[in-house]
Image (tube, rainbow, N blue to C red; front, side, top):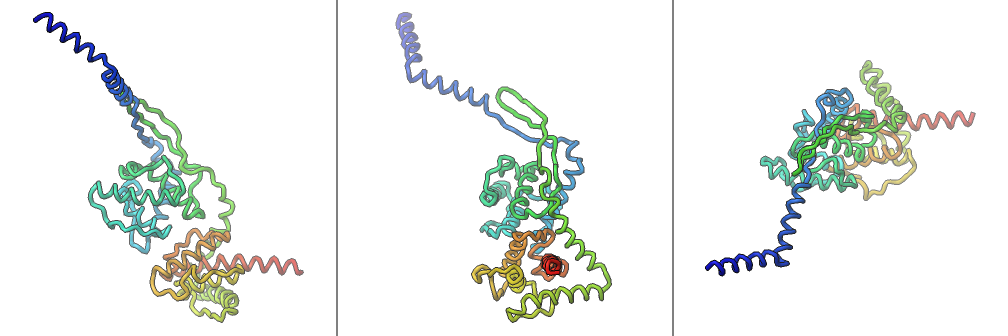
Length: 343
């Protein structure tokens, strides 16, 4: 019995040393080693940075931008920290800014539904932004990670509305915590949200136009009427050769048609009729027309950053006047230069 048992044990030992067993053991050891090297990284904004005035200003500008963009849809964001995690706001921003209408449920109630919605929306945003930035992902947005949310919003502004002036040189101190099978390691480093402004000088005239309109609207009614009359004369002189006549600045630009034709006349180019609706019959067509007009103005260097297309469609007097005044100011200055050269 003793000899049989010894032989059996020796056979088992020989079996343990077989090539297949050795390979399996090596794989197990490798898996254990891999688990030890798996790292979970978390970024946490330091409490002192959360109180930084530049960061507060950036959050304020981004929040105002979102609320202005989604004004027509009656969506109001009260906190960047808490209001973007479920995908609803990002879904509507994507539709408003890029014209991408995804067939998604309006409100996702469960965590799994929210993550599914975010996956689709963020994927579309990444396509439009032209990159997959590691500074944000679906998980971080859903976990209400403020740092990731800010990085995404800043990237969206830079892409969809580059004329919007963001606070420059915003940096935060971030604690980078790494957890792995070998332990926990933390490090504090500075992370840039916005760099130094490269176009602040170019924005002066833009804000000057907008500020002048805002100041005008605070004047006496007869002064406002005189200014409107001057703009009306400028518009009608420009579109007369098309057989058009404008009598009401507040209403006749809301569908974007005359605005597009005016831009074409002033800038000397033809806008293909297939690019816009010449006889818009619904809000979507009007919004498309006005959005195209504002896009053209931006391309031409007229940074009407404070004007949202939905405001013009809604016959917001200030928004319409800002657009017309920007055109008037540009071409009036050009005429003055030409006159000076002739003299």
